[in-house]
Length: 68
Image (cartoon, rainbow, N blue to C red; front, side, top):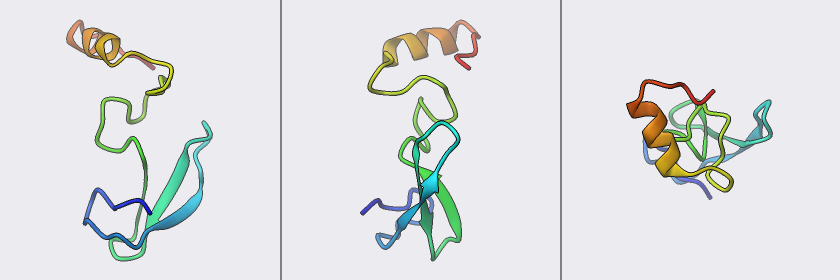
């Protein structure tokens, strides 16, 4: 099970997928949905952790470039 990054609840469940195919989760306590990349460098970016380089994301962000 995925822990809710917003409230820490451990009883979350799968809640469909995003338009890009990433698994979405739902927290019944916080009444929020979130993905595994929430609160990371990859959140709301088209680059995935498996295929992208965290170093490149950090360089692009520091240069003021958007990775979208």
